[in-house]
Image (cartoon, rainbow, N blue to C red; front, side):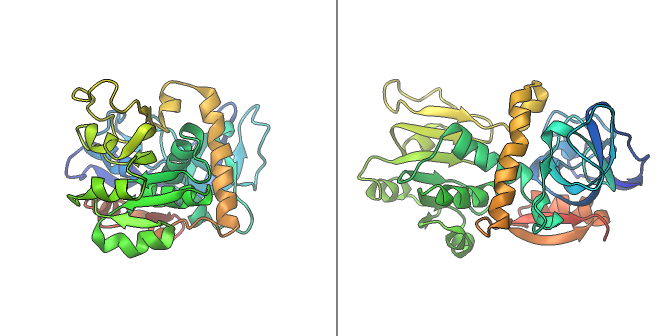
Length: 328
């Protein structure tokens, strides 16, 4: 089968190539899927250039896949050949940038008939991260004010839509060139993260308290840069490594700080969280089916275009999701 393989980590990403690989066989409680679509995430290029530590080459890249079950392993009782499925994969295993991939049966979600494979593949990593942060951790409710940093990217864009669907008022931070796009996704207010008057603008919108919840996509360094935007007893959700709390005065913010690490459930072997993956993804797929969630597909590429697309993604050349049409 054709697959995109990282043969050596390299800052130039020149160790990533399309190669022929043996079709994998499903093990116990696993299924094999004929991949119809996959999507790119920043962690893919981070693995390939050595920024993320979980790579042991050679490895087939790709975390987010969608396709059709074509073989069922021993004791895999929940799925049948022909079922349409999507999932978020394990960083420590071969991925989905290939014609076939194997996955544990307990992480798969069923794709509704009216949702195409490209839309399904666009969701897992980015949309599930946003969902886990806002729904599972912060438990955002109607009337709360949510601040989303990095709203022009995939995680941030999904977070804007999810927060809005929960009945929250959404303040978004993005590059000025993306303001209109972020408003289209549902943001009530959009500001430049580098606006020197940002704290004052946000406090003016929140009775001078600050927001209830902030989703921080990129680590600002000093935690006070984010905590200054949040009300006392508010919540900070961190996707990048945790911010530096060393200079935060005690009894000043009383914020609840959450680390959002979707794939960590694989690394630590926490099955309850892994089993929640398809529950979250099923909800997101239903939202797409109902027209309440835009999968934000920026462009579709062929499998052999993945190496260059990873370079483009690292340079920030795509605001939405890049989807791989594996059969193309």
